[in-house]
Image 1 (tube, rainbow, N blue to C red):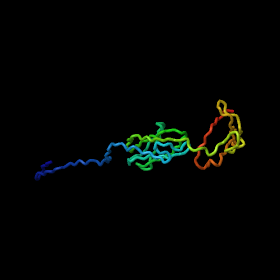
Image 2: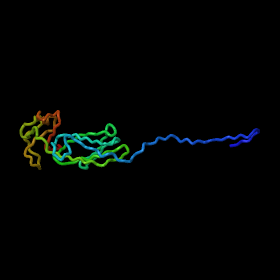
Image 3: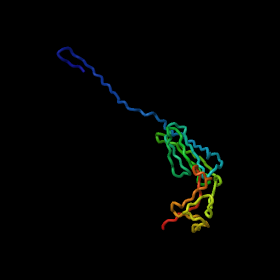
Image 4: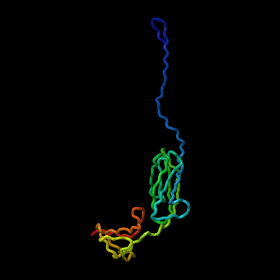
Length: 202
């Protein structure tokens, strides 16, 4: 800009600089989905063999080679989907599973990263045997294998509509109980199998 006054002409130049505001820039993403998870279990390995068995817990670990995995999805036989989050991104997760019957089944798992991308599905096969023989058993006709309370009637009639000839009737009071044989080791993990019919009403 030039301004003419009483004295000599004066020329002034102005430079305007545009300054962009500092904006955080997100790290570039490759767009790749996380690596498919690896499933392992010491009790129930996926090795084509049958493993013992019904009533025995197994621990399953799910892990991924990707370091930004924030959760894992898994389901049995395509049933209800469960979600577990690792303690740190990319870390493994573990859960316990108790087979209730002898069968061949499979576990399906996927990894999910922080951007919500889902990995390919891993299928892990499990083959479960009937399990170990019973440690003890209880005969409802005689006080063997368990100690009944005073509210228990031994050798009662079996439930109608079934082939059970005899049973034990529990009267629903505090004394209607059966105390397991010590051989079952109640402080530990054990399974109980039985046929029961609950009578409702008066």
